[in-house]
Image 1 (cartoon, rainbow, N blue to C red):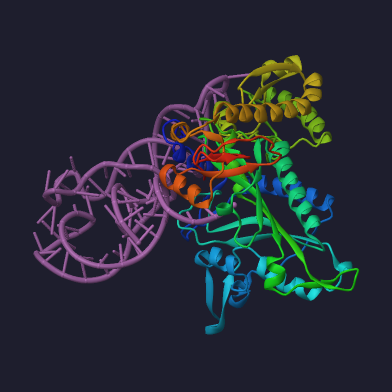
Image 2 (cartoon, rainbow, N blue to C red; image 1 turned 135 degrees about the horizontal axis):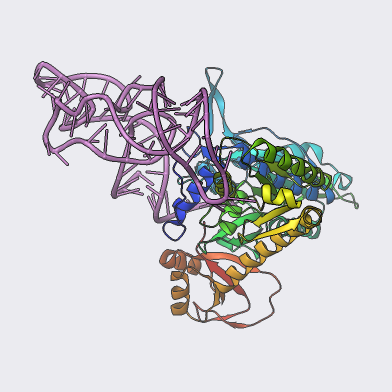
Length: 475
RNA sequence: CGGGGCGUAGCGCAGUCCGGUUCAGCGCGCUUGGUUCGGGACCAAGAGGUCCCCGGUUCAAAUCCGGGCGCCCCGACCA
């Protein structure tokens, strides 16, 4: 393993894969487009999952698990859904050494099999709402893959809810979007734009798609989570009806929503620097790493004594830490190692600290160093982690703000996109116009923000427009 | 599916043009022992190979020829 990481300015894509591999987040699997999520990367995912799971349960959702295999006939029930997903599905044609009578699709998402089951479970308005989430893997046969951002198989959660009326389903879709915003901003320190997707960008089978959208370190957009109002599309495709209070038969209203291991790619690109990862403390596997510095056994025992008092205090506060007391590497090596792996705080304890009953704290994001008495330090670590989170968020937000421009005409638009920025503009165009813009500039509408009340002129068509949209090049 | 790059020790690579005593090599990592330890330590001794695969040419192939496979990067689709 070579020592250094490619600089971001030199080759951003290479920097990204260097970080993923050298920080031991993931490795390539033997099958094209697959990845192995290694323990350090998986620990981040577990933290994300635990946080999201708690938020889902707090809003009344329950977990379940549906099968990986979906009968071909199910996939074909909803017209737009098949059209959208069939081309990127893996299909099993043989089992037990025999050709199957009906091919089995490996789920690219589970709407079809879930709604086939919902038909059996939903009879009355009393069965609603049905708020089920599942943590699962899905497979999409992508043409071009990238670790965490787009792999053939990935991990995610998919929520699938059923409601008695449109308003309630709509509220659900937006409630989840708000949960996703909190997850991204309050836990991953990743500022996101929130809003609706354009017609061409929405989920295959949805009436409306909402999304959170973040800016990465190379100024490209990353769709970090989506929530869909599905209307009655799947209820109709799978004939899922219920008797309402008036004893009338109605189709059920639906939502679905998901975030995936792609979020880890988002963390890497939202915060990382040329030294490697910078992890938001609330999902970092270790929030603190302790590096001892000693020359001989007497120093060692003195330092270990201080570390014992420190780690007891950290444990009491449920701060995740790692004491790197291995004899194999020098302190300098460890500094670089843990910086590459993004641990938010490093504590250095050597003879100088031990004799004074002090410790040195170094922030990963700023690489600033301060020496503090142990007792004071113990009090300050938790608040410092919060400050670290806020600073990471602010830095990313400022970066996005600095790289977002408002334009009034197509010339300005092209220039801004050329510079790789997010572009805000009045939009009165249609899907065809959006497709032309994508053709010419590679940029797409990332999000149509909520709560718009201004009027203006569309930068592209010149027609009057009542909403501002955000364009950007995206992952 | 188009364009580009690559395949030699765990990783990164040299060697390939021009076949042969510089052809099984280097750096990192790994093992053992010792000295080190405040920003990627040093010394010594080791272990480690289907040179991607199949076929061909030749006295002789990592090297030349034919075919195949795989991976990465860049474009068209996507969380």
